[in-house]
Length: 330
Ligand SMILES: Cc1cc2nc3c(=O)[nH]c(=O)nc-3n(C[C@H](O)[C@H](O)[C@H](O)COP(=O)(O)OP(=O)(O)OC[C@H]3O[C@@H](n4cnc5c(N)ncnc54)[C@H](O)[C@@H]3O)c2cc1C
Image (cartoon, rainbow, N blue to C red):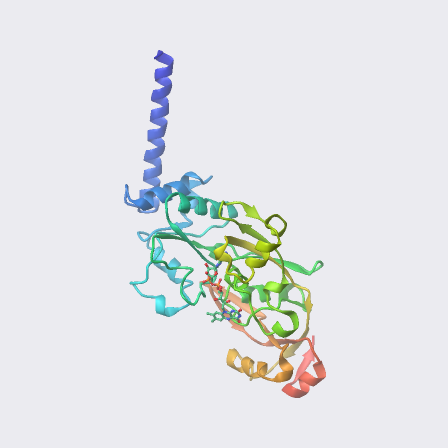
């Protein structure tokens, strides 16, 4: 071996060593990971595939982090799972951009971890945040942008956005357009449309899934697809067949062309009680009645909502006579 070749090998060895040491020190200092553990390989994969180790490391949580439990608990909506014995993820990843979602899928597959995807955490069986086998939890809490296009009557909404936040975002842009979805404001769009999505306008406009026009979706190979590139069969299946059965939804494009009339209500009946609203929905003629959330504040993922507007898109006079409530057209 020539002398120059030997020195190249030495430099390469030292570089590799220094990368390993710095990676290990980042893992142990920022993430508090035990060197040699299987989580270390997974985290090493996540970090080595990222452009910025420090910022990515702030989006990862392991049981050794003090923030791990609060992050996991934040969207455990079924309180029966809020107990120490509930199996928890080896790592929680909270991406702010699509590439980390792809990387998470790649690394989970490579290191033999199951992937659980959580948007709003309303899964009745806790399947989005728990599993009996070692798993990575992909939490969309940081991906909840909503882009309302009033002119084209469409809205792009990222998987982590709550229905309440969607209604609020639409109401900030227009007083006549709406998206026909459910009443519970904390259910997230990611899981909701994957399950079909019923709501108060079902009889007139179909399910929420019927009103989806496009999607950004990651398939099992990590490829980003839209409606055109995935084809109509898959597009049909992910809107009701449980999106996580097929891949990962990044965002849905919604048809927000349903037009409604907004009535300002000043009524003690409405207050903040969903129960009162449900009573209205029971009436035969009020199939199209829905509540619109006009104030929604996000505090630690909890939406505080105030129902003081209602929307109706049918016979207004008839409706007013039924409700016999003072209202004015906006
Ligand atoms: C209080 C309450 C009220 C409800 N009201 C209604 C209603 O009015 N109408 C209605 O139709 N349903 C309703 N549901 C059911 C609800 O729509 C489903 O439970 C829905 O799956 C919850 O979505 P999530 O994102 O909040 O929950 P999550 O627990 O985060 O997700 C639910 C499922 O979807 C998967 N998933 C989540 N995000 C993604 C993603 N980005 N890509 C792929 N898969 C993903 C998860 O892995 C999991 O399997 C209600 C549920 C509750 C608990």
